[in-house]
Image (cartoon, rainbow, N blue to C red):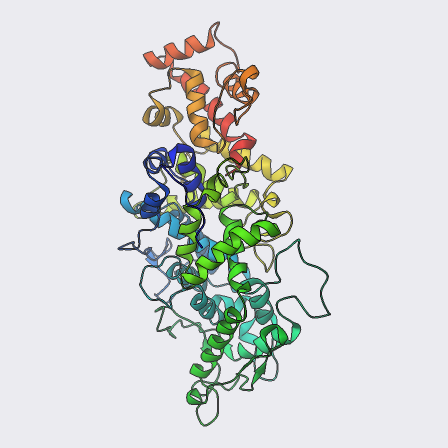
Length: 585
């Protein structure tokens, strides 16, 4: 059954929480827009499926042309360079740059789902070593992000089948070396452990029942799955087009006869009720396997995994929950919230959108139910991707235009990549096969984003942006904090205390009952000590006025001493953006 729905309008705090989690951040205007809506009404903004555009193809600055469908020449950038451009191109889409206002939130929501799918079906750019393959994999994820085509079979199960023969995945997990007589079990193992049924709920598992028995599957199942996946190769011409997705996929070795595919009956273990997968005789040619029969075996395998129990659906719902809500799932939560999401997933035809909409409209997503202190505001440490892009979005940083200022766009987004790298996240290059540790590594999960060095790099990113340290460099961009306050907070800007409180309500996830009075801050979600720290950084560092608050009011109201006003606002924004509270979502 669906989760308990949240009643009433969202309000500012919940709206900001929703947009931080569902997208890569939002502007003040977008938060205010969603704040006036109910959770159900907000879904109409986040899940527009009619007419939502797909991204234009990325452009190589060396040629001024796209390189995905056009054959490359010596005039093109190296593939290493193209991979860097591809990531910079994608950042613009994660931010929904250039998308009409009425579609921007939905576009950004969809793009975050494509990133979610990358965290589930992980690949490493360096192992794939082909930007075109990475582009098409990203396009495949986008196809399955929203329920926008009305096809009941366009669901997560179908995506799981398509991933098995997708060029980037064939390269990454050695599917292209898995052949008749010499099976490579790498992809079969990861498909069972990471991409589908998994091993169960971490932290609740007893010792393995027997060697090679992993609770939901066994070594026998890994070996049988490897035989199912055998015989496919990378298509580096990208001319073999999948009829469902209209995107390139791998090819079978051997042409008409899939001569490298194992055509035997694949016997699975008791974990799958001793089921077997048998080549469909109607799809064979003279008893020999074909591309159609090999693809049909993959179809049988995925259907068997999802048919034998709810565990595969439950495993995917745990991943969704950890990505959008909180990393810690105990048995009680698994039996309640995860079970409800799993049933929504199954009843919704294994589509992602019903699960996300159920989650984003629920009490649990926000306060975890009436009368409980266990809410989810500020419970996730922002990833470097969320931190960098979310800061750009909230501060309304003007980024060089992709169409008219391509080189500076790439230079700027390249600096964002470098900032992320320094903070511990190399985009499309997770440190292990299972992906970025924050999304899977029990029991640390998102705490892996924080170390002494990573935290210093986060603070440096904020400082460089606010202080405009590279604004005069090609592709360098900073933020005009004075203009930002004028555009967004002019109604309260003259009063230093009111300005700080209002900024905290938009920039920090915990922001109820704020007060500067240490004797009365018991119900405040930010201590009075912290707010007074912001005030000291704002007006008293260094103290240049006998009456700092009165002097600030005079300067702002009369637009005098603009350089001092700018310096004071820079100090304030640096203090807020470099606070521990800002690192949370």
